[in-house]
Amino acid sequence: MVDIRIKEIAHCKQDISLKKKWNDIKLLIKNRFDYDKMYDTQWTIEYEAHHLLKQEIINEFLEIYASKIDITNEDQVKRANYWFQKYTYTNSHPDTTNTNLKLLLEKDNEKSLEQMKYRWNENNHR
Image (cartoon, rainbow, N blue to C red; front, side, top):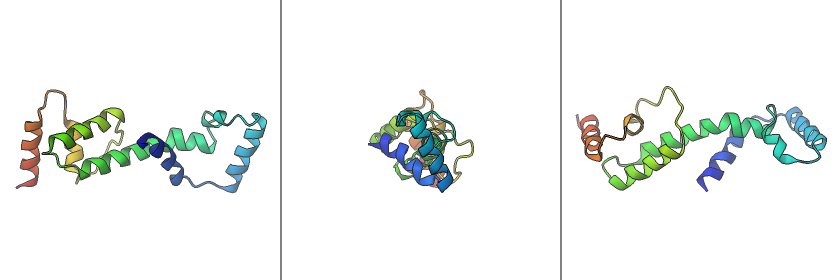
């Protein structure tokens, strides 16, 4: 369900003009109503949503998810790691106030949960 929502929420970020809709309809007719071709044609509504805007939605999802977890809870950290492995975070300037996001992005395979807890406590209890 998360995959489908991420893909389709991208349409909410679009500003679709009547001209763009009309161009898509003409292309659809030209392609004999093969809607799948719309996803691969660069200027279409579907291409824009699923190839250009989808990554913005993924970044937002990962940022919000990271901000809501308790980094000292092993189950929540494992679940967050699942999402960070499933999706790639590509924002080169992550929100600096989101310390959980920074910890999850910096975490490599050798770091243990205890080290993450220590850093979390160090950052949040000064």
